[in-house]
Image (cartoon, rainbow, N blue to C red; front, top):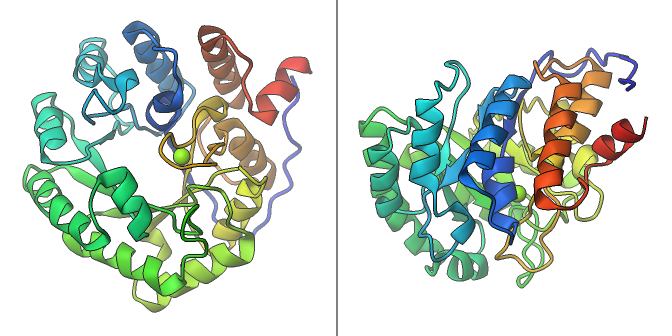
Length: 312
Ligand code: MG
């Protein structure tokens, strides 16, 4: 199995954090229910491959995402198996009830999921754009009071399937409100994958002009139109150091029409390895993990790097 030749680009950050979303964002889009033990093994293998952050599950109502109905059991199972200290294990909490369940389970790091557009807020959260902040305010406040770290996802930052283009000022306004609530990190989502590199640069510049530096921002890019890695490179050039990715390219967004293709962690790591940007991730082990998970899902990984490396 070959690995990329390293040709560093000194203008880029020396190291980045890869925020793994496969067990949550990936599996929630899989219709075949994955057994609890397989999910637990998946998280353990990702950590063993060097992923520093693994979003493990979502405390959403089981009716909406049956795949993740075992969230509390999974967190308990991972804790009982002595999950290594060091990596972070955030979970998604959609509302106060989700936070209650996460706190009961002993979670230390949560993520909320907001929308930059009115249409998607109504469709995904059943609330208007402004109403979503009222829902999240007590979630963030109570999580912070309990000493938890809070990440805020912001979806539809580069376009909305119903509304079309989304203006920079609208995205910056929504992102600032989430940070003002007390979120520590803002993950900007290209939920339908329509963003292009100049758009990434412009959005990050607009956040910077509004006083939100790249150290507080992560990028959650989708490869629907094949733009994800080009957009990562644009983010790196602007100084972003946290990138979301899904092992094996699992998942997309079940509620967004034409939303497919989480950026595959292996494709991201191949590029970062080649650029000499450190991640701490063992690409070979990660490919082994995704190949193992593909076997459980009964179909090959969609990640190009997984396909290439298992052939090679
Ligand atoms: Mg995603």
